[in-house]
Amino acid sequence: MTAYNQYNSNAEYKRWAIIISASIFVLLLFVYKAYTYILPSLSEYIADQLPASAAQHIGESALEQMDKEQFSESQISEEEQQRIFALFSKLQPLRKEGREGSENKEIQDSTETQYRLLFRQWDDTANAMALADGTIIITDRMLALIENDQQLAAILLHEIGHVEHNHVIENLVQMSVMSLAMAIAFGDASALNAILVQGAALGTLLSYSRKAEFEADQYAAQRMLSLYQTVEPFVQALKLLESDYLKQHQEDNASSDAENNLEETSREHLDWFSTHPNMESRVTAIRKVSSAQLN
Amino acid sequence: MDEQALRNEEEELRSQIARLSPEQKKKYYALENQRVKDPDTYAVLNYFFVTGLHHFYLGKNLHGAIDLAILAIGILTIEYYGWVLIILISLYEIPQLFRSQRILHQYNNQVMRDTLAEVNQTPSSLAGNV
Image (cartoon, rainbow over all chains, first blue to last red; front, side, top):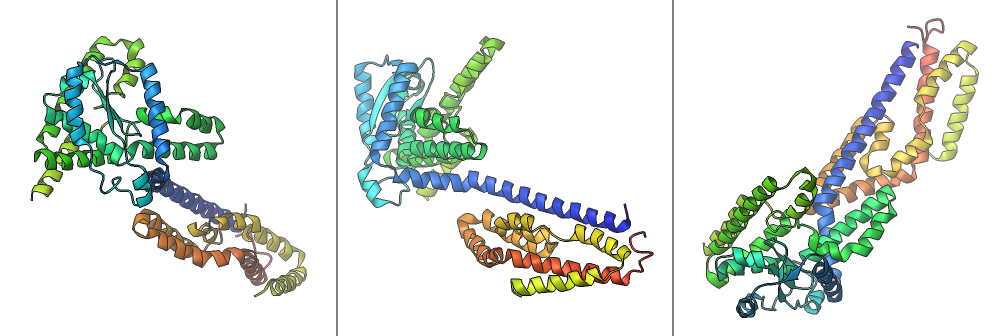
């Protein structure tokens, strides 16, 4: 090869190396921003536009499926349930400002959430969860773990926070948009089918994003301050849940053999604590709300 | 310069190439083949006009880097009006997208002219065998 040819082909390689590097850089940047900002914002917008009937339908379907497959009847006495219902009714938000963070006033008015509290037994799982339609489910083990009404109020307020911020629908929309994008990118129509068929059930099983958990914590902390002038019961409830989670995790590790590992792992992910962000950062954020409000 | 003027210019260059000696022609075409840019590749890179990839293809690295940097800043700050930067760069680049054929034709004519000058200046016995 002549020196001219050598020079030109080197320049050509260099040129294509720049083009390919620049393309990868832009693609990675776009994927990062799409995942961290564009997708959540788009999901929030779409979730705000959905009618109340969609949330109702998703909530009912999810409850029906979980009642069939996961839950059993609660062993909590009728008397105790009535006492907790009374507490729960005090916690429900007053309807003046509509849904938290929503900018669409018309939608806010039409989506006034009807809250209801249900008691269920779920193996030995300490969990509380919010469904899209405002149904809040609390398990027997969670009630056994909680030491007083203020701690229980904090857990219920955290779940109400998820409903107020429309996290269930947002989460579902986010997963659907992401799966749709993957289906388009990789040409897999079965993924799209799965979203449409099983979307409603997914709504309860997905863990929320860290941002959603912090928003729900913030909501609960603010309401705790206005109701009880302290966030400490919330912090105590979180610590109880953490120690229970760690204790159960150790027991699981000790008892499970290699064959059961997969099943144990999937059950761990359904635990309330395991689907939530780092404990220390949550407590810090909750106390920050408290000190900001009190100062 | 419009398309007709570019075609006339290319014709003129082709007639100058035809007047080269066989050895110079061989040398010229070897160089031209490596230097001229493919209109289809340029067009495809131009579809992603905000990224500036088409500038890199023509060796305008500074221009491409400026586009790329503005786009990167735009994406990273999209929630703080970074999208305005992306729109501005689009407004600048879109007209060039429609003129892409002419831009490339002009570029290739320039390459032909430079190569012709290079071949004419290099003694044919030395050219290409340094």
